[in-house]
Length: 291
Image 1 (cartoon, rainbow, N blue to C red):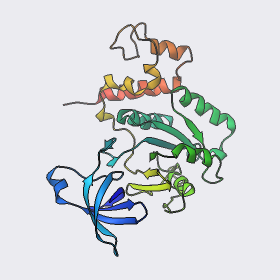
Image 2: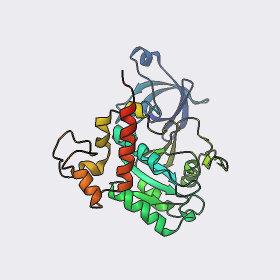
Image 3: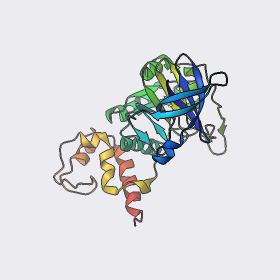
Image 4: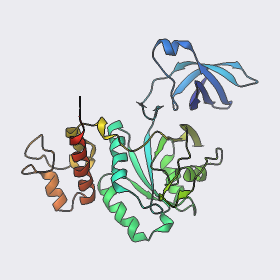
């Protein structure tokens, strides 16, 4: 019998089996012997041991589309990067770091601005002009009013979507509005810090409609700059790679002559905000001691 791991805590795995429900499973010792660990999002085969108590064993992990280490998840089709449009105001430098993380993992990303009811239309257009031009679809929604949630739900149809973003963005509130099976704990905004308190403590896969899953992922934090080499950073800005080749293949797009990226910034074809964030992060990466 086949199912999907929707949660794993302390070596026990909750496996959703179609037309049966959730079976609580342990993993057979063969996985430890082979160096394999079942992950949330895995499609698995199980052996039902007790139908009354819905207990079983995971006997096989089916081939994965992809897998991440932090957070430990598998089979992600896309990432929904959620930031608040206000309260707190979005940190665009942090947003770019989230997008870099998705580019590194080769996971398509969609930007979702929650609390869009708190800002004028002009602010939404400004954010959209920056990130849509960079190649990222943008949605402006409100978990409070329900604005544009049908469009968001349509975007999630037929896919396994990982949710990422800072605390205080309203990720859990949005998940609660998209389905009525699981109620995620939500937290208030700290007035002193201007940001939210973390409420999600483990990775959980939630079915929002048939064959459509959303994955709440507390492990998706900001990019650890020590994990990337300075010369690699430019590869994670898709708008850079669409430009004509620079004069030098090794161009870092900062001071080199005949740089097509800098020319595109001056011409308004690449967001200066995004470019300045790139230069700032590049400088930090160059300061990292590597052994």
